[in-house]
Amino acid sequence: AIATVPPGRCSTAHYHVNCESALYVLSGNGVFLSGTHLEKEEAISPGDFIFVPPESNHQPVNTSAHENLVFIVARNAPVETVVELAGLGRKDC
Image (tube, rainbow, N blue to C red; front, side, top):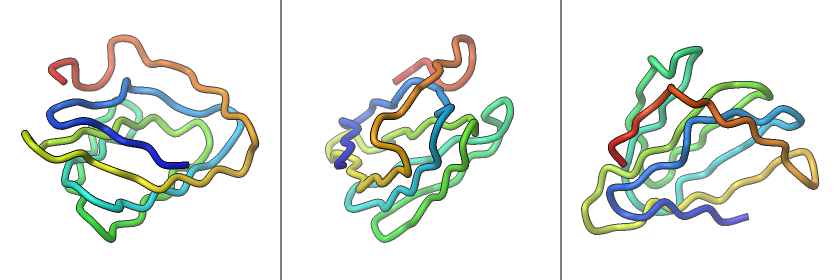
């Protein structure tokens, strides 16, 4: 799949119950939050590969004001089950 995060935006903080995810940053720049309380913040840019194990909290954030953050996403399940993490992650995007 292709996932796009618009400029200045982010996904909700969440995890996937039934699958692991592999993300490849195709274009754009941002940060990837992870960890129990999303306390880990790593800069991401084109060419980066991110592995997300099942039930791992995460949130991609587009830090650009003008360019989409685009991922190629692969999962090991045909349908993902997502659990939103209310109260965690960035809210300003």
